[in-house]
Length: 421
Image (cartoon, rainbow, N blue to C red; front, side):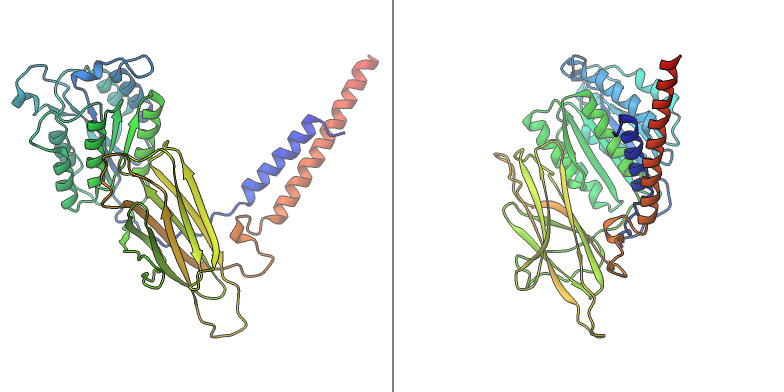
């Protein structure tokens, strides 16, 4: 009879074997880091009077933001140079000109002293105006210099109150400088107008917009964005997909960006030689307000329209990016000079724009293409992740099973001794 302990031992050994045997897939030749400088992130927090509202899990918006910042500061990777800028934190009066200049660097962008940064955050009290445009301009200056990635994470609970300095135009100006700065925005308990403005800011720089109504959502999302800044920076190449495979551009291994309109599809072509394997993945970002149910489909088909393989994924509005991928190993050929096969990649998404939302330009997509050497032999399962770890898998599973048997025997022996005594 298999006891719980023996079963647990066997399962534990199996998991250990899988962990040891899994091989990391070959990295996509999608670009190289653009520099060795440390990544920089500037968290820009709205501290205007409306942050007093108590509608996030029974606490004020300011309290939720402080809680999130403390947790984010604890989790910030060591290599990230992080700073904090405020808007509306210092001037409580009614003078518009003064209120629209109210942005300050609470903690400078640089090596992080977690205790000092937390102390600075603890002093914040909801106070004044919402000068988003001026704060973005100042944050861009905070991040000036260096070749590492640069990211602004803007957290606000309202629209900019300092027009005519339109924050969307400010974001476009920052993007036009070509300094590689991305702005991500988070809206606390958003309304339609605020969502539209924050989405526009993010879209201008290729960033993302996220609606937040709970404290844990705010913490998780800011953590994700800070972690993303630590990823190596690559330079994607713009590619314009076609509406048919015959007109599609031929892509080599690399990272590509494009835009796909609602209700349309994009085609690309990749040449795969016998003995090679095609690995492709695509992600589509909802950079504006969309209906809550959607999906993305990536298909590899022949030039005659026969489907080879597909990857698909679905979402329900809980994330702003959806991705899927596929792999196609091309069999070896007996012919020495066998020609490459042209594989057609089709990208289709089922996002639909919410009422009153612009449908152009299309949603941004990123396509990764990697053509690598396929498995050396029929018995080599490296392309499925286990590599040559089968022998280790067998040894560890057998060891775990025997350990379970021994443990069970010892348990029965101890019980028998206890009963006789």
